[in-house]
Amino acid sequence: MSDPTGQRSNRPLRPAWLEVDLSQMAKNFQLIRADASSSLAIGSVVKDAGYGHGAVEVARVALAHGVYCLLVSNLDEAAELRDAGLKAPILLMGERMESELPTCLELGLTLAVGHVQIAEAARRLAVSLGQQLKVHVKIDTGMGRYGAHWDVALELVNTVAVLPGLRLDGMFSHFSMSDELDKSFAREQIRRFLCVCDTVQQAGLTVGCRHLCNSGGFLDLPEAHLDMVRIGLLPLGVYPSQVCRRIDGIEPVGTLKTRLAVVRDVRRGDNVGYGLRYQAPVDMRVGVLPIGYGDGYPRVRNEGFVLLNSRRAPIIGANAMDSTMIDVTGISGATAWDEVVLMGRQGGDKITAHDLADWKGTVSYEVLTALRSRVPRVYHQ
Image: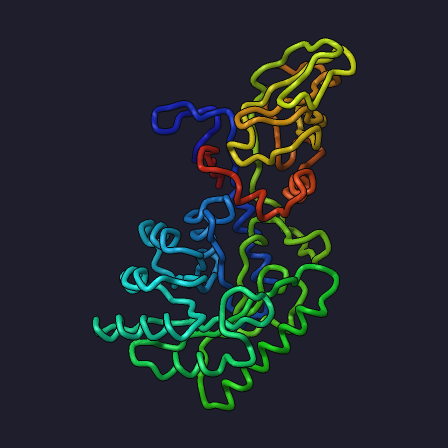
């Protein structure tokens, strides 16, 4: 376990870091498992560095709590998991160039396929090597992104099923909006996907695993659970929206922290930060935090706050690549190198990923995945 005041690789840890509570993550997985039917398989989506929390660490906790498979978006992500010694099934989503297929076989991945051409290329390679490649067919039921359109999908499913060198291991689609109050289009996507499933069954084809739900679908659309759900955000204790169903006990596992680098007096009329976006209305005390948008912290302007000494300190001015300024005038005792929370709890208050997203005008997914590698991850059991 690392400590933000200790050493890492014989160097002091910089005063900006993300703490990840692996015990809470384990509890979240347990609560998700208990909330689901016993027959439902759970896939853990660990793409984009496990939504910023560390792909290998999230994957290990997930697998320790009965997750069926891991899901990633590109080969580098899959290789990281294999290099860490993880032997679990890995579903590689998205589309692949033909040049990537040998590595898919080498790493023992399950391949998402959305068109006939890549299926035929995968078949040629697998047959030439005397191997078999597991495939999940992607169906476009309304996302308009990857996959065969739902009303002509049988052709692709049948092609994968009969091609030597390929094993039809699953079929899936993806919701375009599952976590809002209006579920009408999500239910239309369910209808379309089930229509494809019926057509495939009537054609005498066997599909190993049908999956449609992301975290929002898992929470709010039990009729779409089918054989497996794919969850990425929820085990991290972040809900996909403010209105989806809650599971009691699930809490955020990540806390973004920094330290107060400088406390300085600013006179009335002085400017603070780039662009002349803040001018001190009175004599005040300003704190400078050694973290900014270069670390992935949202680019904000006179918006939001941080927690210092269990008090809210407003963000002032436009934060920079490496620094963010806060008003500490009303926080007595604030001194250099005090601990500051930018996302998470301190005292009786908290800042959520949704709060940060609102301040920037984006979504919580971007807030989490934007945190760059130069922000150390500190793991606590």
